[in-house]
Amino acid sequence: MSQPDPTPWQAAAACAGLSPSVVFARRERQAAPALRACAACPVPRECEAAVAPAESWFDGVCAGRLWRNGRPVKPRSSRYAKPGAADPLGLGRPDAEQGPPTPRTVAAQLDAVLAASAPAASGGTP
Image (cartoon, rainbow, N blue to C red):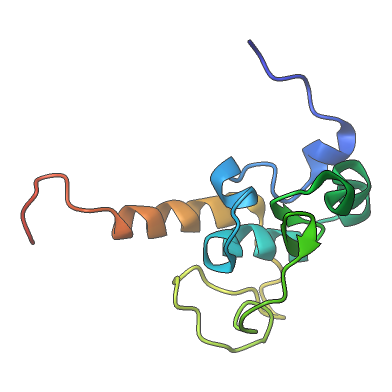
């Protein structure tokens, strides 16, 4: 069964290329790439209106916030919002000179982190 074509706002969403496991993550660390994408998203109001996280008991990232059971989750730390803060995931941060990351950049960085954190396929240590 195929997915329906996205609406124009969905196609423009900064998270459009991200994995559903990132967008619908329940924890800040796993949701970090989606939260960063939201910071550069041109359609946060349309997203929040369509998802209606508080009414739908939504879990995941919507309109720049992490939601759990339809309630916004208070960030445990400010490392994803504060300029110059440490980035333990190694995903990189946008800065004023670079501008916000593109969805493609975020997805590539996430792929690199996931590949680096996966156990070695050979079963041995390097």
